[in-house]
Each structure stands twice: as structure tokens, then as C-alpha cells.
Amino acid sequence: MALQEIIATGRRKEAVARIRMSPGTGKIEVNGKAFEEYFPTSNLQNSILAPLQVAKSTNTFDVVVNAHGGGPNGQAGAVRLAIARALIISDVNLRGSLKEEGFLTRDPRMKERKKAGQPGARKRFQFSKR
Image (cartoon, rainbow, N blue to C red):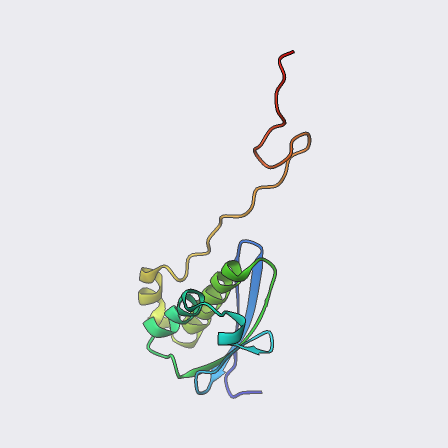
């Protein structure tokens, strides 16, 4: 165990990310893989690193992520929220700058459930007058 390990959770859509953040060299590991391997596009990588860059602690913490559910975008959003929450636990003074950038807002949008008697959440079967 590290000297001071911070555990945080982030969620987006159906994705859940549980992280363990400890002082280190900036290594990020997601589900046992390197972070660049798990999230191959630079958009997703930048999205995850954004809270660390705002806090100016990119190479200060090692992050071990356990992500499941949803797709790559949802998981990236969940990891970003978890990292932002962990940074606040490590230093309360970062709250203002992280909140200003919108990293602490849990995106409440979820997939709407399919209703009975229709093919999707909103779509209806074709109506036949005769």
C-alpha cells in the first residue's frame, strides 16, 4: 500500500470507473493495460488528462483505474470525473478551478428505457388507419 492512497468513483451513462490514486510519476493504468493502449484516440486521452493538467499535477500521481460498462466515451468521462474527485480529496483548494472547468459535474444523461408495446424508447410501430 502507498503512503496516501485516494479512492474515488466516477460514473457516466452506463460506465463506472473506480480509481486508486497515489503519489508517483504520472503512470496511468486502466484495467491492467497502459492508458494509451486502452484509450487509443487522443481525444479520449486528453479528456482524461484534463483535470490533472488544470491541477498542474500531471506527473505527480500514479492512477490505477478499474472501468467497466458502457463504451469508450462513457468510460473516459467516468475516469475524468473520478480523477477530478480524487484531486479534490488530495487538495481542497483545487475545487474552484476544477468546478470552473466543469470536471466535477456528473453528467446525468442516461439511455431512456424501452417501453412495452413499441420498438424503442420513443419510436412507435407504424400506424395503420385501415
